Image 1 (cartoon, rainbow, N blue to C red):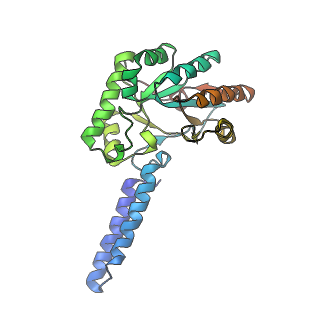
Image 2 (image 1 turned 135 degrees about the horizontal axis):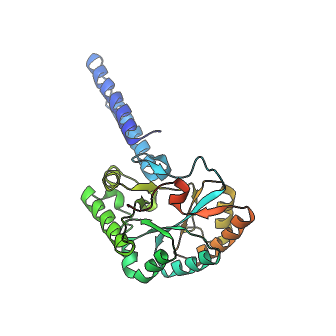
Image 3 (image 1 turned 30 degrees about the vertical axis):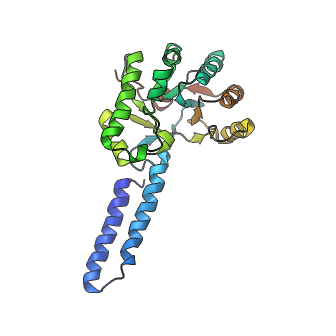
Length: 258
């Protein structure tokens, strides 16, 4: 796996060899810019793809499923739509995993309590879900993660161990904070794109075409269209004999610190 350490080490060695060569025979300045440019391109792609595990190990699927299990995950709540999602899940007796934003927990504590009371698992999705998180200092990221951990623990009486990075973006600072906090970083292998696609049929078909045992499905409990897609998806899972479980059950890891 190509990681930040491997990428930096390789291109650092390339630059060093070029520098040594330049003492023997002068090299044009742009020769040194080429490996830097390639390093930046790889770093940008790796940072933006949570599945790459570029900065920190991420869990995106159960690669050795023993049965037809999948995990439904919902990001960016709680919101008023979360209650509609919960109503649908309750009708099918399904437990899901919700990656919650700390500021949303403060706005809708009653909905968050319902999540917990109905047996769903919750994880950390930072406090602000800022699009600028990738540029935050280590201290600011620690505050984002720590304050949301504290809010979740206030209601669950347990420290959460599951974390999903906003937009699937990771950085060295975020990786350092998460390693120190002991979080598992949860990605996905099926991205529904329900936050950007308006057509419910397209969202549903996107999930259906990618469905396989061990999958982690990314949804958002922020819109009515997702509620409609969820109802169709649960019917499909029943028809194809899939079992929907929480992420920690699918991956056989703890959701909370004991």
